[in-house]
Structures are given as structure tokens and as C-alpha cells.
Image (tube, rainbow, N blue to C red; front, side, top):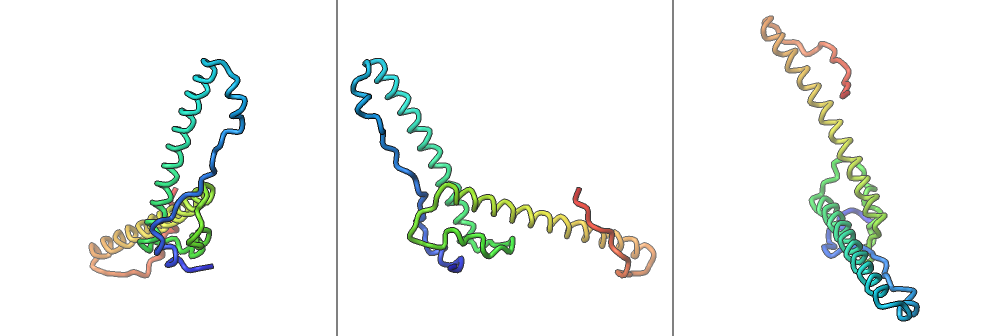
Length: 149
């Protein structure tokens, strides 16, 4: 397991993509011209779809790596990026999705923590306002448990 800093130095990380070579080229030569045109049209549409999907995965990977370069590991999960610690290998689409899932979970944890902190600060503010109107300041009052729902 290499530290996260090893990932930061690789600015040219690429998505691993399976090559697609037609397995039925011989049978395509025997088809009628309109069938070949329809198949060629379909193949162009499919290739465009794959290229667009691969570009989106590439964009997601770049966004995730930018988060690593910024040193944003606010969720406290040091093992979050262990799956891409080898700088020479490409990252599969499944690994990109797993990285995104972990990132989202970390952001959700951070959001819940900030909501809890906000709730506690609002409670403290209310107590201080109440104490100021009474002329006394006390922070020993028990806090209500946090319930984000």
C-alpha cells in the first residue's frame, strides 16, 4: 500500500478500456448491401455511445484524482485510494465507480458531521441568548441529542 502522495504525482492517469474488434467480419462480407449499410450505421452509433460513455468515465476519474491532488481526505478514510496506488497501471471503470462511491460516502459522513455541529452551535447560541437576557452565562446545561431527520 503506497501513500496517497504517490497518486498525486501521476497527472496522466488513464482509464482502462477493452478493445472492441468485430468477431464476425467474414460474415459481414456476404450480407446484402442494405444489410451492410444498416449494420455499419448501427456500429457507428454504438461506437459513438461507447466513446461518449468512456469520456464520462474519464471525466469522473479526473475529478476524483483532482480531489486527491488537493489533499482532500476529509472523510478520514486513508485506504480510499489504495485501489489506484500503482502508478503504471490503468484504472478500470469498476474501480472508477468504486472510488466515486467511497467519495460520495465520505461526503455524506462529512455532511452529517457538519449538520450535527451546526445543530450544536445553534443550541449553544440559543442558550447564550437566553442566559444574556437573564444576566447569567452558563454553558453547563445539557445539550439535546442531535437528530438530523
